[in-house]
Length: 208
Image 1 (cartoon, one colour):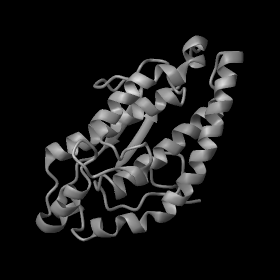
Image 2: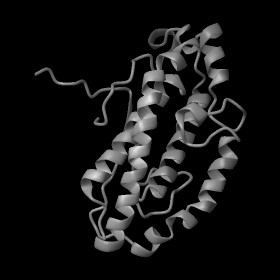
Image 3: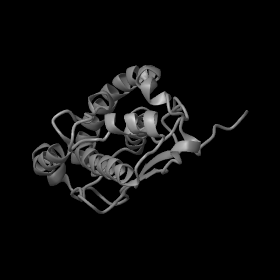
Image 4: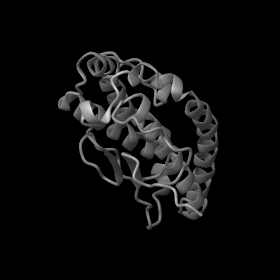
């Protein structure tokens, strides 16, 4: 059987916590996440709600529209735009990982912590088709549909994990891997259709 390629230019790994989890912070996680969620909202802009289809091109959020226009008309992806987009995405993922009970440490606004995001900086003139940014959102619709279904399943997994941590002190590894897999899938789709860092169509899979 042919092996699936694992070198997609956008990867996400989250370290599985081996020690017993903090049952108290797990119990009140929806309250503890509020301050950092407010900070994320302030730097993300009013249109960002953690879903690929909700990313905004407004100032303060992911620079989508400006990047798309720059690629179409100049075939350039300014490095500081890329750095901002990736840093904001990484921060969002740390908050999501904390809310999803994947980790107990409070999300940092700067440090990588246990959430490892890697997105390669593209050579716009060599790696990116200048016209694809106009249609990537349309080409990614099948992924958006699948992610809506997987997102619901991931929420169910988080609820089950919440009870598992309170009763047994551990996040079941199968649930952990599934939730991380959904987030990984989302990252690949975001890199393709929102961050515009690659023209490689995202694979339909949870794994690396």
